[in-house]
Length: 547
Ligand code: FBP
Image 1: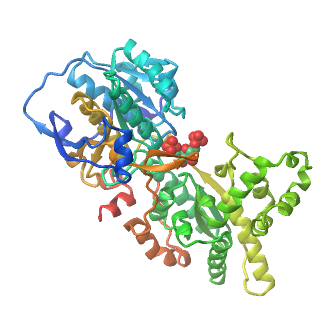
Image 2: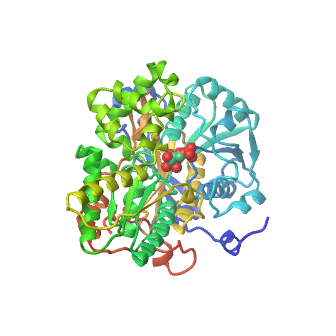
Image 3: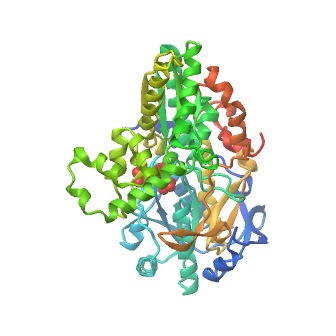
């Protein structure tokens, strides 16, 4: 395989690690834990893995002999930069404790465990993937591990390969499933430990114990580089408004972090939209007002950042989508209606409130809402081109204002969606170091016989030497939520905290950024060079840690 110069140089990068993981370690138990909410229900559902103490690893001079242990690893869900480093850290970690230990990777996600699809990850394979982006070492998948039959089928292959511990690298749902699996294997004395690792570019797997999910750092830096480039182009040509949608599913962490990095003219935060009960028209009016004010200053250009999940957070759109879901699921007649008449048909059938909103939507978006449905009959909101929806509606509003003599300016919009561009990027030094440390930490949790824990690395705004490695019982992060009509135990998702420092900092600056072009151009991620350029964590982490 031909490699780029950066790939070759990166292959020999030695990730920085907490002092406590470099030599011999001992596990120090903290307080016993409770789930964040619904303690009674969670305790009943997880009798074997509930209430365990937190774990912190400390350096020791005492050498302990560890038996050779076979370990399995799974990459679950969407790609996030640094996954390969979790695996290389895990590999080096188990080998450092006993060179006869072996690592097996299950292919294409949790489905690989159920289908007995695996490969042994040997040193030559691991070396090919150190410090690289992507999940291609074993692939990833979104199969949900939730049924007893899947657990039992998985156990067959774990037994056959003599695997004593399984590491599941995933987001909130995958780690919820890891916890259910840990509980089940404990309850039947299967002799298999299960350890989770916090992954997702979305940044929504974080709490009092987990400071950040891996991949968020790199993905945000990649998007910010490109947005910065667009801003420089925008400020050079001074003729376009750029509407930029950013991945992140429900939470707006990515959009907010990018806003803090690049200082755009506008950034919408879904959590604020919901809290303030904004309508689509409120959002459109706010954007149009800024466009008009900038035009009055002669600035017919700007940038708007839009979080992927926005549409679901606009209370009125949520209601419209719910009615459309029910209406289309029960309506046999609809499929018979000619395409050109479907819009009018829907408008005539919806409740007056939703009908008016639907009628106000641009043609393309209205069609997406009525046609693109997932296997459960839901509108696939992620396919809705919110960036086009907003720019079209802003354009219409400005045209009205122009007729009324309230606006004089030119409005020309361009659209972008950044998501996949960042998910497999070469991990930043932060993610390379953080992920490698998470992998080594997972090996230590295994060596100490733990199950139902998530590997954690804290104090991440300090230098890596001073990071703290340990584990948190997954049950501690859980609460009960309604999923597909049923109450289920799940890891609580972290949305943007409107009282938190990152949002507050953005809110304190946004009026200035809207009117005065204060763009920041972060440039590409730097892998080699001074630490203040190469090793900085996200603005979100720095602000949360008050730096
Ligand atoms: P995870 O939550 O599994 O980490 O995935 C994150 C994500 O990148 C979201 O931001 C995005 O909405 C989704 O995956 C896209 O999914 P897919 O890869 O299936 O297109």
